[in-house]
Length: 397
Image (cartoon, rainbow, N blue to C red):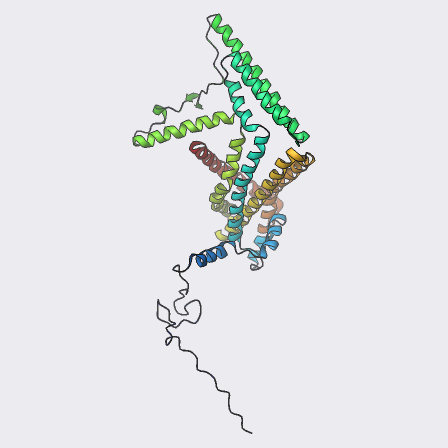
């Protein structure tokens, strides 16, 4: 019995159906042109589809995140060595991991700062800070007495609030004692100044009056003349004067309430580290010059190191939020949060040393020497970066 071959359908001709690449005219056999490589999808489509592709490119971390984050935090250098060994698909890629943690850390710091500020309002920090300024600048004994009494009353009200922990009571009492000490010093100055005026002697300088910023022993005040740049137009010089005056005012308030300055440091830390990351890779290239590694290898080390720092900052923000809640409701957690924070900060210092040892595989002596060189250089760069960011923040707000 003869069996006839099974008939097959002829292959579709892409050119007959118009399925050709609009760029080179070659037949389209998939989402990318086989001839010129142009993708089928362009930007001219529904916005939801475009945003979906962008989110997939940036945040496609799926289940790999559960293998990546524990290894990143607990095993220094492991992810970097895995990447160098070619085992890449099982973990989140270095840049995607860095970008994801940087973005989340920046958002968490902003949210955490807001929540901490709300908690501080319940402890009377906002009003007490303003009253502390009034105590420090009181010009008469009566003004000083009123400001001191109002300061103590504000904090006593916060201390007597319901459901407040014993640690919060101790912290408030410490601020009351600090305000009373400042009041005594101000009272002593007012008495000294009154005695000098009565005796016809020169009055002592008022510590509440800002003397400006000292540069090489000379006092600099933010005035129109001191901030003017001759080659700039008038509107630019006016803007410089406003920024200088804001900076001076913010620095003055930070003497009594440095919390806003500290919050400003943490708010600009992720952006600063993002900018400094390529410089860290350059420092590693210099330190390990004779290892003959490519710059991109050091760049991957820097990516994972910064990703670890961002993850540590996330944990510190979480611990700080728990501590803020515990300060008002569960005092026993405050001590535990303090120990956890200290452990994380210690791990941040030790982690890069262990990472360098495992990635570059040198002895402890050379690793320690190079760790000190790279660490010192990076800290200097980080200091300049943070200083510039803080100055910009003080001048703008």
